[in-house]
Every structure is written in C-alpha cells, then in structure tokens.
Length: 98
Image 1 (cartoon, rainbow, N blue to C red):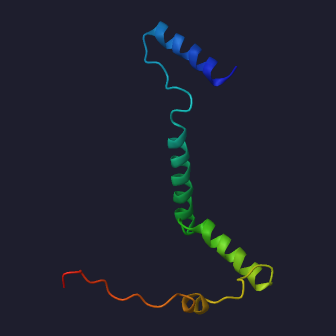
Image 2 (image 1 turned 30 degrees about the vertical axis):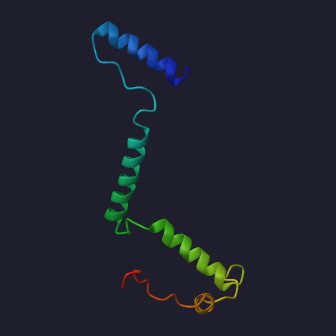
Image 3 (image 1 turned 90 degrees about the horizontal axis):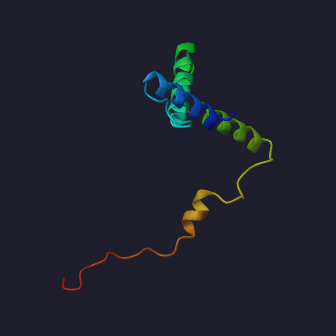
C-alpha cells in the first residue's frame, strides 16, 4: 500500500468518525527537515561543538590538506597578477552640461 492509498483509508475513517481528515502526504516534509536540522544544531551546542559551519570547516580542512599534498592547488596565478591584468582606469563620469 502506498501513501495515497493509506491517506484515502485514513480520510474515509475520519469521515466516518466525524473527525478532520489527515494532512496530504508530503505536506509537512520540509518542516520535518527543518526540525531535524534544528535538533542537530541543538545537540551540537549541548555537546560543546560549533553549531554552524561544521560542514564547510571540514571541507575547507580537507581541501587544504589536499592542496598541501600538491594534488589540488591554484593555477599558478596570484591575486596580484589578476589585478594587474585589468585595463586602464576609467575617468570620472561628468554630466554633459557641467
């Protein structure tokens, strides 16, 4: 039996008893996901771990280790070289009547 069939049976049973029908399947899925995320953050705070940014910190750490091993890195160009490639400076725009 799938979710729609179960919903139909539950709706019929609620109608027979004079109760409100149950919510449609999938209606509260995103709310459940949000609550699970909040619960995980709460558990992290209780355990003394940072509640935000743990995944990004782990990814950054992993990428940093790979970069040090030479497997991953920049293409050899620094920020200064990218800035120096910009074309000449633009002058200030002035209104034509001034």
